[in-house]
Image (tube, rainbow, N blue to C red; front, side, top):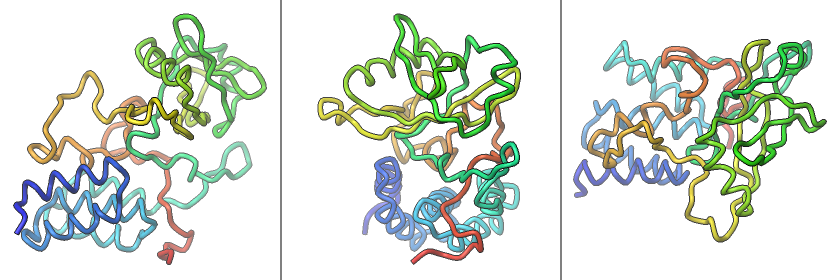
Length: 253
């Protein structure tokens, strides 16, 4: 029998590599040994979200609440599972599926050196953007050439290397008002020479490099949807994120 520690390590590694079916199987094996393992249940619920099984995700998070009724992770994702599939933006409806997070392949970044507030106020959520590599930073412009702001210096330095190396990205406005703007960046393709370089490492310079399985509450199940740069706290449910589910909440085959 595999030890719980080795199963935890495998479950986290599978999720980090987007091997959701394998992660589901491994977390279920953990629960066979310990049905009250809250970390495994939280990981399992997130895996079900990623594989378009909202009912199973909801049932799993409800199991967490029965064990720990104040668990912030389960509460957050139960709220998320209650969101509708589309959000209104300026009288129109956009699919929030464009904001679905994938560990290592997506990132929400708040812009600095912002454009004039009148420009930001006129920019709707979902606006397609282009990343422009400058000498010391990456500027973010709409696909019509309107400057919105820049990525932080550290992030610009990292991402510029990947862009110059051949990676491609899709960028859209995720949240905006006259005083702030954040964008959602998704890796579309990775150059062969960068095959083993993550666009958005799960660990930042400000996070401890914890060995998988030793403190797994700090890893994938702690905050699978990385909101660290949005200014939201763990109890807030982002309005512009949505689960991969049908509007009626049924499972996909």
